[in-house]
Image 1 (tube, rainbow, N blue to C red):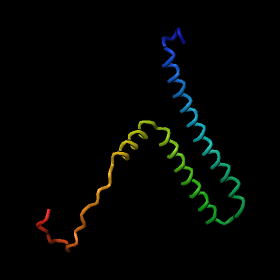
Image 2 (cartoon, helix red, strand yellow; image 1 turned 120 degrees about the horizontal axis):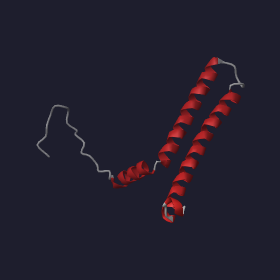
Image 3 (cartoon, one colour; image 1 turned 60 degrees about the vertical axis):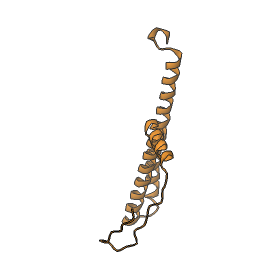
Image 4 (cartoon, rainbow, N blue to C red; image 1 turned 90 degrees about the vertical axis):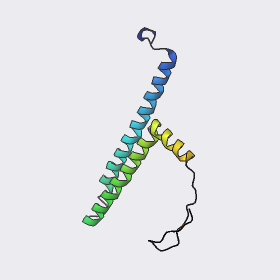
Amino acid sequence: MSNSGVNAEESRARRKRWMVNFTQCVIQDSLQLFDTINAYYMWRFYDAAWYRFLFATLSFILVSALDGFVMFIYHQECLKLITLKWKSTTVEPSPVNSLPSGHRTLIE
């Protein structure tokens, strides 16, 4: 590492990023493998077309949602932005207009 001009701190940061990316890839690939194996064996249980269509659709939706969730969790910048925005957002009660539409009040 000393020949490449990278100090120990940068090396640790690169190693950590590599490990996070590797972990994300393994999880996402495992989800796709699970979907493929699951579909292969589940299709053999029942031969009806509606069952196969429903199972394949729900399986695809579930794996795609989990895949997106993994990408969201591992995308640090997006996660930080969402958590900061979520923490700073306060819920304030909004006034309810009980008058029929088209009528205005003088109260502001």
